[in-house]
Length: 429
Image (cartoon, rainbow, N blue to C red; front, side, top):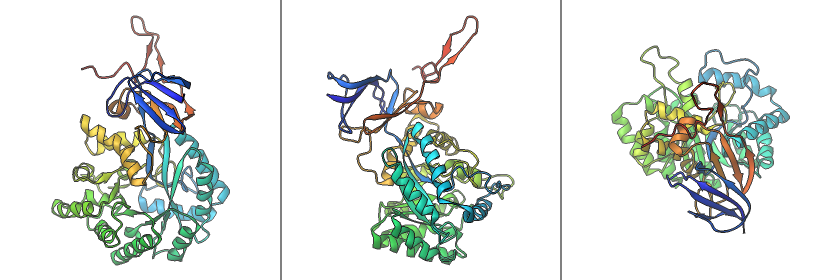
């Protein structure tokens, strides 16, 4: 007896017409035909069944704060940081919790069940940490929320920045964060990485650094991060987020840098939506778009995953908790429009991000946790093109979100009565 069988499913690897059986909170069978009973059966009707989406880079403490206390007029990273500094003294735990929970509701409906959020520790009150720890517990039944102790104003630059980060970790935040390019000097940035990697090694924690989020090709903190990763034996447990300066570096230096990153097993987290929105703001034309070298990093064997970063906050007025929107933009900016390219992009939203986050039991295989999403699309390539409706979201073998398919009714003489974009426009070989 299965708890749930999803029949006639297409799988991310291109397999079609499979049944997926769930029992005891795990995937118990994936077969062409499961001849068994279940408490509930759902016909996927040839739709894509995927593991849930993962967002390895987000700022939940800032989400849904757009317009508080004012708008970012210049649209730059630095004005966003300054604006957040104006809002931070006004933050209350209650408001932070309420906005974060609203975001998590939306995330569930989009099939996004794993999120890593950076939590600003620059305010010694640490109200952000208190709020997000409460949120982590409240959403635990349906979202795994990882929290990064993030010194937004700089580990050394912010008053009490060092002590506040340590206190936040003592409170139970999961990961050590940093922002070396925002320290007062390049040297301070280097020293901050040395200190932060040492703290992580001593505490047995992962590291996730906002690294070189700038157009300056001489911002090369990723080199130091790779070296400190090796020095402290943190290979595979360190993420370099953004890395936008690599977009502007000369090719010779990058030819040295990428092998160093590969040696350190750095997890790379570009954030396509925010990277192309914030970078190149000082350029006229040609105008840089800022996203790091995704294709080259993937080709070198580095684990590349994509983050959403922001939604309706001082840095980004857009966003929808939809990781397919992130992947859709990555395809365009990285110019990865081929079929195999798109498959790699989809993996960067799912299995690669799960690896970055160190998730256990994640995936679509027998024995994995019974966490699934059914999409109104036939395969991963079409999912990235259409950004389709998440028809079902399953957590632990139970349906936690259900959406009606998007069907357009037509009233046109001699034409079809309805349109299903996830079925009627699948490419025909």
